[in-house]
Length: 289
Image (cartoon, rainbow, N blue to C red; front, top):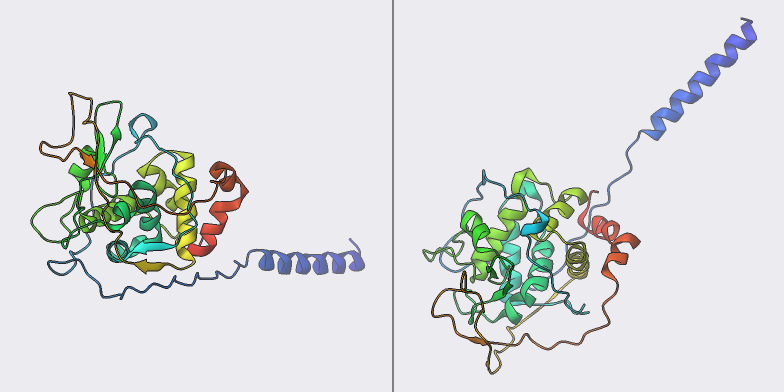
């Protein structure tokens, strides 16, 4: 090999080395700015100090034939959240620091599942003024409470976060704390898009549900307005559950309070929204991908 050829190869190797170093340098991560709210950071549920975060050894594996059917809810251009629900979401989000769960994720689920407990219709302890039951499922069961837990799931994950002596799925402090534990199961890091998607799908394994929850996460990450609870309206009679195998507990009122009326827009095609980059938008808001 000639001296000239040898010198050329050495120069080429130097260029390739510089290129490889440059291509492996990770891009800078832009941290998302926290959304503003009017609820103080020190808000805690009534009854005592927050319970210490704990690790649940049993993680429920959700399969398509066991999930709650999803009923589409009209998309609302509204960033308002009742103050007591906002405080509960923010409090519950801090239960497992290593999970990096943001309260907007809980708020997105709570919005889709029960419109924030029918607009914040709860008593002084945070228990809904009228029990919330989901539609009857194929096995005769009903999801319950503002975060819509199946009874079998609540039996494993339910916690008494307001320290009143009972883990109650109809209580917003208990329900949001239990939802936080459930979403953070198995060591998930919800600042990562993959873990966040899997967590929401573990709640309800449905693509349209995932997209709608992510829409609300995006909305609430842009800032929220804390509002008083929506006053309960006159109850109307509703038929009792038709199943004889499983039904809400005896003594449950057979009346239902309509959800608060809001101005709605035409719902977008939520599945197209996911394909069009909704997950990327939420990933930018939440931080790392």
